[in-house]
Figure 1 (cartoon, rainbow, N blue to C red):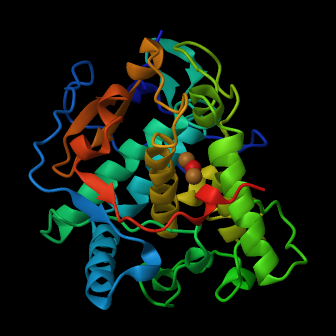
Figure 2 (cartoon, rainbow, N blue to C red):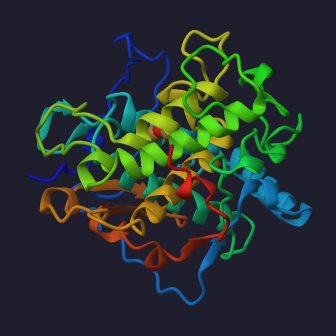
Length: 346
Ligand code: C2O
């Protein structure tokens, strides 16, 4: 069975990794319409692909547009499903057991630690990007990706580090601001290594997670989860490193759960989250070009698994994994940049 969309009517208090309840309600607002008849999203036709740029390479015009869009999103009514905090709450509801599967009332949804990880986040960014574009009247607007798999991208991108910018978040690890070089395998302790060693380690890890250790769909995407099964089945290579490591590296170690980026319920309150996930999404597109058995699953349970999102017109829609496999159909591509880890065989 595919994992069904959440039952919006039973969204409840979400909880933290240690089981304690999250002290605020992160259920996104309910639509006024009939919950039993949520339409399937129709992909708009694409005339020209948007290009998601590398965050370290964007110009001032782009930064102005992007900041304006985020500022407008933050200024929307707090109960507007398109409000920035409500968008962040989507992540909380889908990751901290707020939502239950429709038809399986005892089964919480958890979009991490399984094959749902890549498709859920792809759709999440897709709508987030369209909402930003509509707030500035620019349907060519594309999110940046944090290109930490190449040397020049291995720092927090500078556009996120301007205090008072809507792209800034004070809840980050202050020791990891530029010029600190990221450790893509970060646990909780800073490496005692030179920048050059860290860069080499990072490229080695990328090679391992993308190529050596991910020769087939299950190792790359994570283990199957089917409708009615309890979550946390086992994550894929990339979800672990660099994905989880980057979350921990950015989050503020002075907070109990390394909020914001270091824990699911608050991660998407940091605008850098979306640049991090754009790069993770980019890894999916690259992985499929690496040959061998590196292709999407053709298991119906994966393809028919579903999620719900508000589109940029505030219509609640249902989407499936099947409909997100081809990014060009979704209307975007990634800026073509060098991939130094590709030939970085240890
Ligand atoms: Cu849903 Cu990077 O986490």
